[in-house]
Length: 103
Image (cartoon, rainbow, N blue to C red; front, side, top):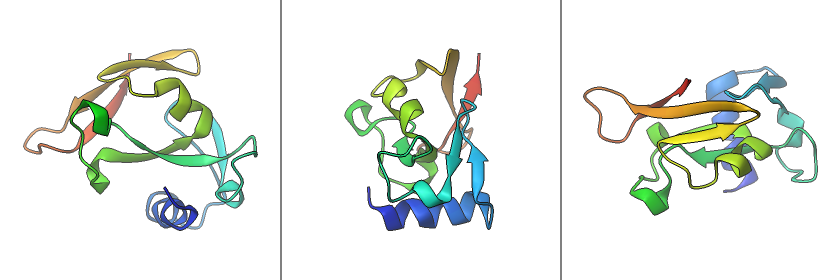
């Protein structure tokens, strides 16, 4: 996904903050959106991967560190990232929205 879409999502989720932690506890920096070689590179990830029937809608997309994204990969509904176990739970009353829960 594009740098501009990542920045747009960052602004919606984190506002004016320049640094934030993803759900797995990894530090991300807004300035690293354009730099995939940065140790702080944020990415957009489909909670329910498209390959597993997920949709390309905002409710199914989360901003997370590139390493968290790589560790999760196409795993769903259970995965490990940054040494922790997580699972996705569908939001009641919504077919495409999920929340991430630490096990």
